Length: 182
Image (cartoon, rainbow, N blue to C red; front, top):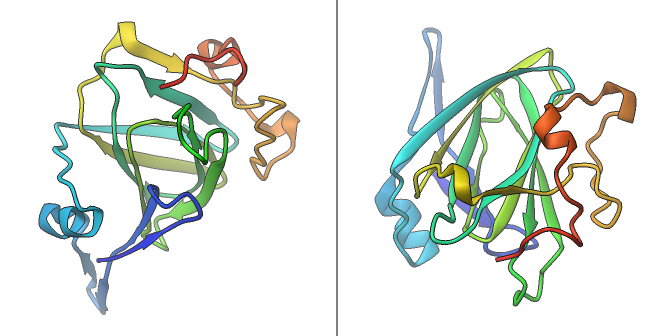
C-alpha cells in the first residue's frame, strides 16, 4: 500500500498494490501496521459500514461530535463516487477547506479521513457500493451534518443540480456557517 498526503495533509490517499492475473486480482485492503507507521499514530477501527446507492445519490456531509468523533477509511467496492472531506476543525489552518477524490472499483483507491472532518459522496456510476471503517461507534445523539449544497463551501459534485438526489434528512442539514464545529 502506498500512502500520499493531500493538500490538507491530514487526509490521505491509500493506493493498494493490485496483483492481476487471468483469474482476477488480489489486493490487501487494510494493514494496521503500515497505516500506523505512515500516520504516526494508531487508529483503532471498531465498526465497518456499507451502503449501496444509485446514480446521483448524495450522502452527507456527515460527522459526529465528541465524544463520538470518527476517523474513516473509505473505499468503493462497486462503481464510482466522488468523495468529499470538509475540514470542520475550527482551530485548523485549513478550516472550511475540502478535498474531493474519485474512488472506484477500478482505481481501488481509499481515502483516510481523520477526526474533525465532515464527509460525503455522490455516485457517478449507475450504482455504487461504498464501504468504510470507523474508529468510534455510531451514536445518534452526536450525529451532525452540513448541507451538501452549501453556498459557502462551493462544492463541485460533478453533476448538475437536477441530477442530485438526497435523503429528506440530508436536505434539511444546516449550512456550513450554522453547523456545529469540532
